[in-house]
Length: 331
Image (spheres, rainbow, N blue to C red):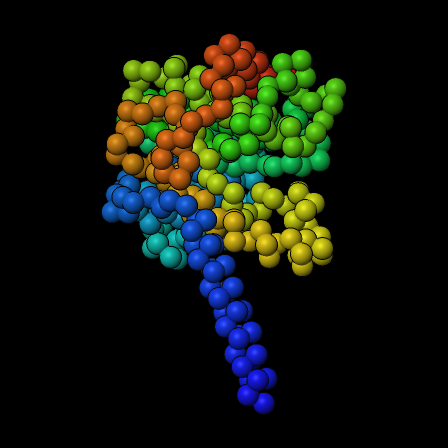
């Protein structure tokens, strides 16, 4: 009986050690946290795209708690209102607003900007957070491959339409949520819209590289205006963004994969930390065109420094979003 009891105690101890070690590993993998937690954002006007869930919701929540006037730019108004209610009840900040903005529709983006400008004279912080990841091939309302269209082109249009207010509100900031995936990305100069061939991973990586190229080119164009723009990698975060990845959407995954992957995934709260850092950190007021991860500067991929590709992508983006002609066309 004593031997049996000893085995039970030993097994319980081993299980406890395993659970404790897993929790410690999970805590360690959350990464850095924004340290200037006393920084306020009272009266600052902020737009966060994709703010109804995941990193975007946590970013909006954090900024609302610090007194900002937060515009949640979302496609799904029902989810947005639910998220807004959570944020307002917790922060007691009524200056949180839901506004429809579907980044897969340039008409929706233009309508969002028109409504925003009718309500606000200034814009202090724009956080381009929304995105889609590794989805089956689909296109935006204008015929642009969905990952490129939402992750890059939609934000390209939104940002350019809001630049006048950002300049009037300087010093102001733009934060572009990219990904470590940009280091594997290549801009397909002969097939940017993935018409000849489509690979969901390559298309995602291309869109995230486009985010960094856009950030660097925009930073050059904004020199001397008081508006800064920086890209961030939030980490590998447990959000709905992974919903299209088959490895995370099966009974096999639920039993045999997720329990082992879980300790290595950041929570949305920690995934939002670098976005908040880039938006509020005082020492970054004049820093622009950089790439951050875990609330610290990180080296970007060599292909993200290609100035010729950046200029080419900018010209194509202007054409496809109609920011020069007022019309949008894909060719």
